[in-house]
Each structure stands twice: as C-alpha cells, then as structure tokens.
Length: 223
Image (cartoon, rainbow, N blue to C red; front, side):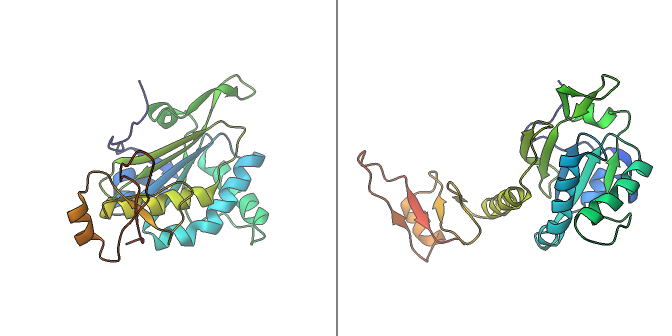
C-alpha cells in the first residue's frame, strides 16, 4: 500500500516547487526535515496553518530543520496564495515564504506518500490531501507522522515540541513524558540499568515509589 511507516526512508522524489525544482534528498542534506501537506490553495484553514508555519520558521531553522509544504495546485497558484498567507500574517504580501511549497496538481506524490483523504473531495469529485506531517531525521528516515483530517487545523507549536523530543531522544537514552516541554525533566528509558544510568546522568536520578514496588519511573534533568 502507498504511504510511509516509521523507519522508512523518504523517497528521493523530484518535484517543482515555489523555490524551483528540487530533489528531496538533496534538499534535506544533513538536516532534519518536515514535510506537511495541505488540501488546497486559497482555503481558510490551510492559510492559517502556513501563516503559523512561516512565523515559526526561525525556530525550526535553529533546530536544523528544513520545512517543505505540499498542496495539490500548481506553482503559479502557490505563488499567488503566498501573497495571501503573508498578508494574513500582517506582512508585506510577497510571493516569498521561508520554505518551498511542492506543486502536486496530478496528486502523484500525494498518492505515493499515502496523503489523500477519501472523505474530502473537490468540486470535480477528486480526493483532497489530508493534513499530514512527516518528520525525517538526517538519515532521511521517517521519525514521526501525524495525520489530521482536512477539517482540523494542526498545532505547529506541538510539531516544534515533538521535534525537540525527537532530537533529544536521538542523542540520549531518555524518553519525554506526557506534556513535556523543552527544559523539563525527562525519563530514563527502561533498558538502561541503574548503574549505567548513574554514569550517564550525573545530575542525579529521582525514582518515584509505586505500589507495585517496580522502579520504572526514573526522572532526570534534561541532558
């Protein structure tokens, strides 16, 4: 079946975008990457999402994350729509956004990546893309995917939060608990023995006592 699963390598597709023609692996380079799809240009929810993504672009750049959007219209429509997005943000209505938008008018890439929403269709009865988020690591492999229906806008602050978690846990033997935010304490993963944990986390480990007597809730300051 079309689509990507966690751990799959991103296909090295070549596409036209608002920043010119790109090959995906070359675009990513050694960076992390976020690919997020949109049902259609000149639509209300998508405009608010891309506006927020543009505002947060400096934060993603700080984290070495390259952003790229996809919508099922052509480059000319994308460029015209970019003016509306910038105007929505209260900025000069130019055609330039801080990330490219892929033109997928024939839906070839949307089908390949499993992005189509069977319940949302355009006036011609063609399926629209759902609101998909793919996060790729520097190894080009899928680290996280989030799927929203066309009628529900995404929370880009949450996407930034999960990027922080993914990058932290890729380098350290920790996991991030519920509602974790950058700077909060983290959890030592169960596969790390206590002796090793003490060496890995010299700032100390707090173990919460539980009725079961099992000592699996081990917290430590964020490395």
